[in-house]
Image 1 (tube, rainbow, N blue to C red):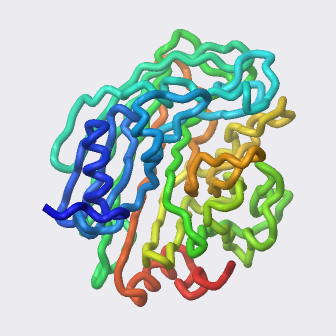
Image 2 (tube, rainbow, N blue to C red):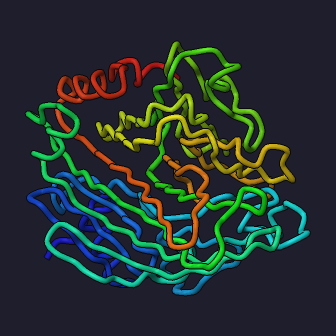
Image 3 (cartoon, rainbow, N blue to C red):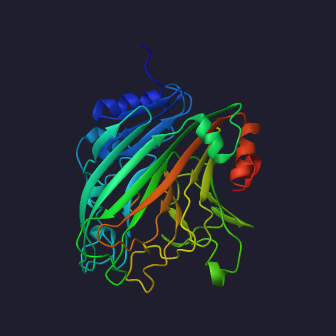
Length: 381
């Protein structure tokens, strides 16, 4: 038997099967691997069978250790479930009265190391549940139930949902439905802190990967800035460009930086193009119209704790001490801040599409969905 080639879906599948118990959903040449142990996250996917490119970034060294590390276990995975906010007086990552520095930042075990319970599975869908209890920086307690559904989509569904042709193209796509229900006795109030559903995907970087986010045009006084780029210090002009109603961001895994799009600027669409592997990724998340209350994750006591962003992209890079979690880059979406009454719930849905194939076919999809050509994505940064 031939050894699986590094970078292929089969290589990652065999690796994950050695150390974990992945659930595989398959439809023709399209497959995804989902891990109950890692909160039901989608670890990776392929649109060309076992020998096809593996889209998700996987932290092989950490998984091999078979033990948890302090602060955060970045196992990888191209879609994972998290909870916001990360920073501020309503953070669930910092204990009360602690300074907002890395030494005091800890990802709650419920979304880091605790498995989700798999409650059902069929050919194309898997469902998970997990009861959680969290306390925020201000001492507010939250009891809630998370329900996570992951569905592998057929080519016919992709063509219908995006109104595109999939001729001369390979595609893998999946939709995740993520619900939080307040199981506590008290309503969640803005004054004492709200939570949000936060979805993050770790993907493979290279100097030939460019993230693109279409945004809505309009007055900054009404809609907010076109892009926020000061999460970890301002992003350099060589890595971030705004042209008209498009934001472009370099995703090479070599310089730590993050950008965000305010909710009134968001079109619910973002994507990336990997010229090295001829891969176009589109992330779709239809956000509720007119809702401007999104949790703020900046690491400080905040004047405006509900002026956060709806869409984000992160590029990994070396920390001050020279160490690095990745490299990887992330595409992220968030729900609005959730002011849920007792027994009330909210569902955040997003769909991930990966395409590979003839450049002309990819160009048609990119132009239609993202409003930009493949040639432009290859040359903008």
